[in-house]
Image (cartoon, helix red, strand yellow):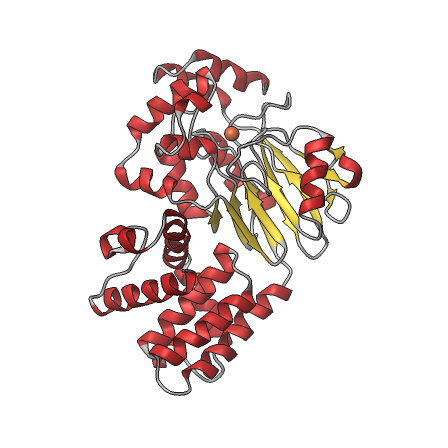
Length: 370
Ligand SMILES: [Fe+2]
């Protein structure tokens, strides 16, 4: 199914490129809905969006791997194939060997003779090099429509020069600036997973699965969103996993269950099932990390070799008693994570929540971080 979807996406992007357009999230217009199930459509949409959102970074990576060639000299098919492959491996999390194998097959089927070997060489240089490269990641989670908090987090000097910014979902819900937060996340983040509030706003989770304040905010938020924003939220993947580093909103093993990892037993269960991988998640709004035997730490820096399951806390609604916005900075070479807290003009969010008629409790809890 996925091989067929990859081919279909390549052909759609080829047709669009000939017409001077790009293919992004609206694949249903291209006939995807009748051909593929919901899960495959969501997955292929995330590749299409990643290739558009990160097009300059992807072009730079490919160009650096083209010895004595420039991008302009490639055939349209070769170029589209390489872009799609890099987007899938780097931003959607498909293992590089799978992407390379599939891309070589497509090159042999659709491109000129010899293209398979050429694509194989370029993708090895891009993806295998990136796999061994140390990365500095900035991870944000649970923004919940709190724009002043998100702006302060993204402007914090500790995150300057990071290689990638990842968002663990719940961009919306509770707070008064859902559309502005979606726009800023789309502009600033290289990878985004869905949170339960995001899917609730997109109409994909029943409002009855939220508490009374969450459900009230959800109804208000859904009314603010444009069709494009709703569709984008609804198409976000539940997990991203690349080179042994995973990202999800609630639960690495059962991401659609929206279970909370709150105690040693649930953390230990995840650690046993994800052995050898590092996972970052959010959902509880309480930053911490879990290690073998379910030992929890809130001390920063975190050593990922000892604590490979990391809760990144919340940008827009912390609940650990510290009202400052939280985010994490990861050094994949040193295997360390720094937990960062940032003050932001909380009064601005408090007064806007009240002004927009959202439940007052959602404003008051921001002042105490509870
Ligand atoms: Fe949340």
